[in-house]
Image 1: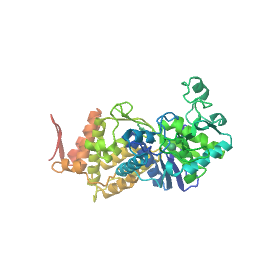
Image 2: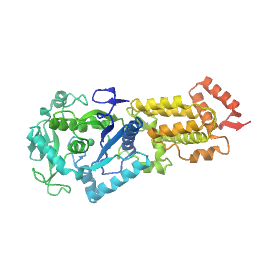
Image 3: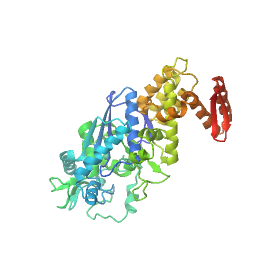
Image 4: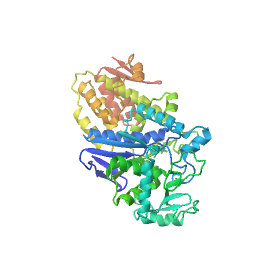
Length: 461
Ligand code: AMP
Ligand code: ZN
């Protein structure tokens, strides 16, 4: 199996260090407002990763944190704690906000058929571990105290910037005016923040009452649940330059060696070609999609159309096309059930398996899946192969094709319909030879195509 490692900037052969169980730490949600579909894309990427690993025969120990304290509105230590800010604005207890948002998060990922991690850990449940980690870094001379907190001193860690290829000297020279006058370097980051009396979430520490920084939570919980060395750490690409750079610095400074072998990052979901944000009113959740008639499965299929290291642009036309295509796929798959024709499955299964093992090339696997199911004839062997590869894809391909069946029962069988769609796609792509070939294939199966103003019509002759 090959996976792309952000740290080495190349695909590398992956085998768990112990040969059996892949230890994965996945940065989880900051639970101050419901997760949007961009966040969901990142959790789908991690789900495809864990499924592909299991498909290769490895066990998985997947740890995911829930950030319910410490993530400031600016990743680099500026602003207010996100959960506390939300709590102030909504005049609701921060613990209650975190609880409700977390509950909704898990309901959403369940609906997306995202497998739950083996271990889910909350930041607020691991404050002593973070305090101990911070204390150890101070003892080793990697951290210093200021009037407002404890900061990691990046000048004591020469490897800082390695993950993202940051040039610190250049960054320092061009840095914006530092808002925190106590920090020695603008990239030094908070391990612990001293809290003013009115701050709602705070704990006792050797440095007085306060709360942990965001980055230390992942290093401390990764160490607790996966040990000093583990296989894979994931997150969205936005985590590369600050959050993960800081995690590496903290962990390596404490342990004296790298903790993580493979760093993997999912690219962003864009909306109409741009960023999604509350202020632009384009921040959609799964509930927004459901309101417009798109199920979590449609969104999952939509995301399966792009490799996780490529940006994916969300548009309503795009999700609509995914819906149509997914519903057809279900119908085409179902048509193979109990079929007795001799239709080839094995070569396609090999292609799909290889695609999944080649840095999670899910779009390629889906392409091979389509090629397999749209072959003429019906075969249980094909159906079985689909169910096999669906262990990785997680598309619930054994579901009843509600919409698609309604459309096709009174016209033509789903496998024929799938061929018609393929021909239309070939025509649209100006691949007329392929379009003609499929027309002939349909004719041989006893179906005639007529191009009309309303589109193509297919009927049994
Ligand atoms: P947060 O809850 O803000 O900590 O983010 C949760 C996860 O979603 C992180 O791994 C982010 O990197 C990721 N993420 C945030 N925005 C997007 C986006 N537009 N597309 C894909 N992933 C995202
Ligand atoms: Zn993290």
